[in-house]
Image 1 (cartoon, helix red, strand yellow):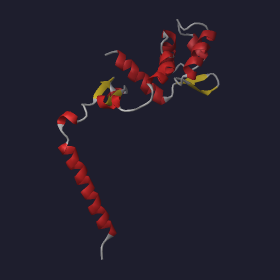
Image 2 (cartoon, rainbow, N blue to C red):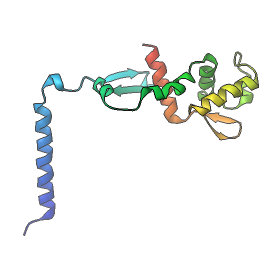
Image 3 (cartoon, rainbow, N blue to C red):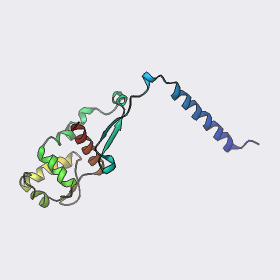
Image 4 (cartoon, rainbow, N blue to C red):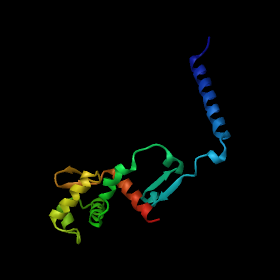
Length: 147
């Protein structure tokens, strides 16, 4: 009597072998390019971004759709607000104490723009934070600009 587990295992081994053979027979000129890496000290809590240049050519979202999100970062005051919020100043009162950020009305104006584009969220009234995926995106953007 045949053992179904043995049959499934044998089938999986054949499939893995076929995949490995195909990977080894791929000509080097068609292999994906080496991974790109931008590291801001990932070991010390920074950010590391990896990817392959070949992935850029693949169909993906229309880059123009990101214009508003990126435009929200185009103000020195907004970038400073994000920096202060990431570092722990998460209320308008605390942010108003920072030189160069303007009045509380101006700060609210910038916070609304950052919130509308997803760079900030308000977990409770009057408190702001940067969503973790956006912290990573922001650090990756800033790291890339330093190169």
